[in-house]
Image (cartoon, rainbow, N blue to C red; front, side, top):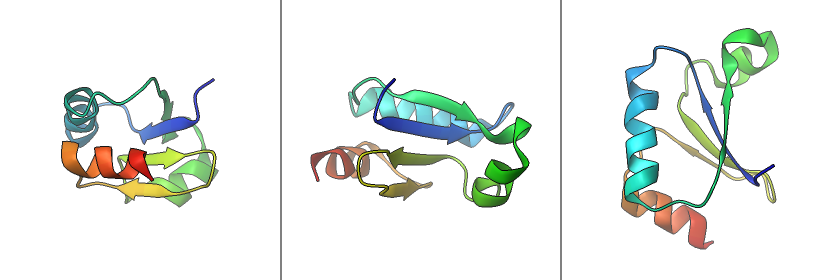
Length: 76
């Protein structure tokens, strides 16, 4: 299990863009978590998706983000 989590939703074009940004940033391995099946996650992340979360310290990066923002987020 990775320390990085990308919260996303099925059939979400912004989430697809976020995956491309993560690849462009050469982000390390991360887990994808879909909020569709969880009422709690839907309440927490529903209007903010996609969201990149660092499980080590709880920091989150909300969309919109680009490769530069992801690299900066990962370097902290």
